[in-house]
Image 1 (cartoon, rainbow over the protein chains, first blue to last red):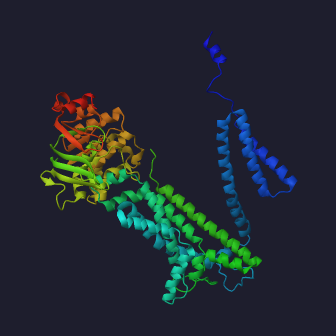
Image 2: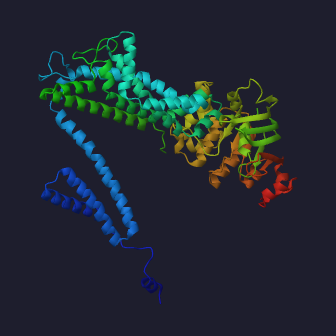
Length: 350
Length: 258
């Protein structure tokens, strides 16, 4: 008997029945079709259609795979399916949010809107714009970053490169506590200081509250980035007779600068949307005030809040347009951060 | 310019753990000394005490004396940064700075120390790369990142970086353990050339390598796991490998260890 004949007689233990490559798509399409039919027939909402199709997909995948391929492969497929369903469920609110904001926001969003303040326009009238809010936001967030970023980065350098013992533990602990401080509490803290010195609302007061919120985020992200720098690089530099501070400045920081920048940008994105402390400390203003150190200012999230509270269609349109501007602002920051991270990342090319 | 190292009664700790105990030896200038011994016996720790890199590890401290041409490295008022400029080090894994080009990597020691003339920098880099037998391979791409080189080239780049600051002594901690035989051969040839100018101490797990490159060999051992490592004997390499005076050395070298 030849070898081939023997091989044919014995079934291979390594080969088993496999579902074709297109089967997950077919099962998904089938489940959606069934769910739509059932949903439309029973008069259910679209959310329920989605839930039904998700469940159907998981059950059908398991059933079919268990029948054709066996239980182990079925488990693999159901977990893959769960990951996909979870991914889609997570996408729903995100896409819905961006979609709603864009659709409602583009109505009044134009150059005029971006370059004019509310001035003498009443909330119940059409027209007006967000120039004063953009100026306020940029100045307040910019000043907050100027305060929080250096302090945060230096704190992280202390914790990673120098911190030993009690002091470092205490700093870490308080950074953790600060991460959990609600923004309104940061606002009240600065407000109490303002009341002691009998001051009126002004932009920089908001910056200080925002800096309090931003600092722990910067410390945390920078810490993680510095920890990623291999110790071998520090040792290589120290072994060349380079002092520790220059090692940190010239070797550790350049290696991690991409990640640190990303962290700072994300922290900026976080504080750019804060409303509560701005409401308390900056108060809001219908007119353009370029000076953050004197008199009330406007800011984008506060503008959105106030316009929406005004409760008429013109104000709603302005609120949505301002929201869209805020989202775009944060997104541009993120893109810039990614660009910097890629540009500064350690090079590996040949 | 190579200097003599004279160690007496050196004990090193990690926190409360004693890693090596009571080591004394002399390393002659312009020679190659190899450290051999089982893993965890304190070869690397001892090597790192010779340029005060041991104390960079948290909890690391040292008792005893290390004389570099009659000056105690652990004496009062000695600046560890200055010590490391005199006693350079090459590590087990090649570790070029990833943000820097090949040129900047070699120039790093001078630049970061702030003590150089701009006009001399190019010459120093060329001389160091030639000294590390790497010049011909990289002279056309000095501005490319150092991490793009092969492992063996990276290690020679690290050697070039270390010799660019003109140390008196060069410590090498298993410099070939991550390299293929051909790169290893290149590094070994290089060690033979470098010993004309530097005092070289090399830690290795490769006994043939110790036999090939070194003039003197030191055998380290530890009584048991958790016990401090000790220097068993140091002698001319030829004697260690042919007729060692301690039985443990012979057992280790011939593979009858343990």
